[in-house]
Image (cartoon, rainbow, N blue to C red; front, side, top):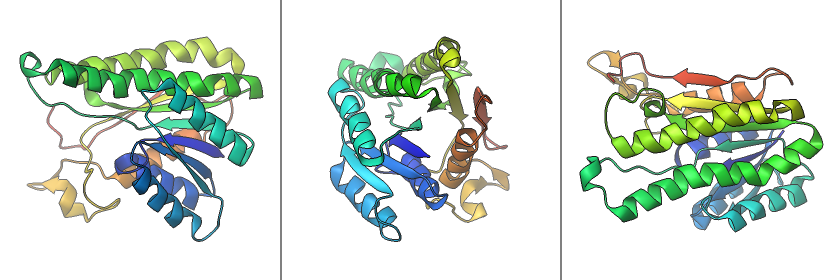
Length: 238
């Protein structure tokens, strides 16, 4: 499978890229930090050259999204799937959020999700199918608590996935959403169990566990769509 992975310079996107290549897939790495992408590509291509190609870019730019798809098609001849992990974070009471922070958050998480999906979708439709997979925060599903801006943008991504799923099913395109609770984003991919716990209860997911969920969804047989997978640590308090 040839997979376009956004937000792959670090965090969950980087881990998914590693696991995808280890499973025999090829990846197009897209993110804004070119030096980190290049380092990751060198790591992934060391055992077997040609498994990863780099496309520095911003999902909030339609031109960058189109270039990522074009580069992937030129490198691999085909693209089967998108995994969109690009995202940002603003953890402030809504009245204290600056207009610049609102614009940046929406630019990456909402505009980015729309544009990278739009860029790849015509190819998937033309080839008779494929998969679009977006990662989302738990507050797109449960909106009873702040931060308000996070709940707003994650709800928009949920709306994209739920509506687009119906629109493109007839063309063989599968649309899925992974909704995540707390994730250990600065620790190793698979840290020791006690790192993810607090007072004996599991409080965070590992990035490796999230990557396994993503690859599970991508590997379902054609015609089988996992609409949504909600992944949370058992001890997380909402």
